Amino acid sequence: MASRLNPYLSFDGDARQAMEFYKEVFGGTLTLNTYADFRPEGVPQPDNIMHAMLETSAGFTLMGADSPPGMEVTAGNNIAVSVSGDDDAALRGYWEKLSADSQVSVPLEKQMWGDVFGMCTDRFGVSWMIDITEPQS
Image 1 (cartoon, helix red, strand yellow):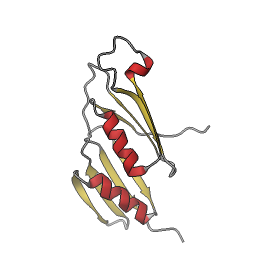
Image 2 (cartoon, one colour):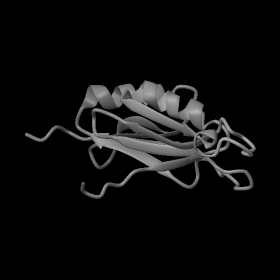
Image 3 (cartoon, one colour):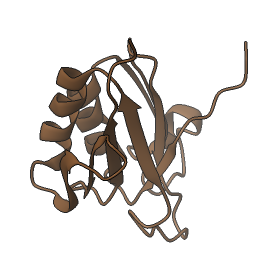
Image 4 (cartoon, one colour):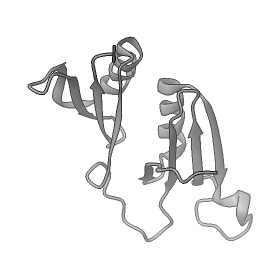
């Protein structure tokens, strides 16, 4: 298997809800493992997510977890996830779902470099960039 780059998102107790939301947006297969799955006794938040992985038919892989007790989470300012390509309909669909109830910092519109681009921070504090390029001829 070749190496791959995966965004890994940290959450403060709402990893399950966030990863289920991203599954609604992108589709695919979501695997959720709780802290209790690996250490059933003596875990402060046994239902918190120790590791989550969303794999989609579009080739996206998104990973995330609830931070362990004692680790501070600063949501949204330590990572941005970029989704780009030339499938206008699919990318606009992702944008519509991600930007709902979000803080839009750059509306999805044609930019000076020629692409349609937008940026938002979703309701879980994660920053997203959508970039739609012209199809290659």
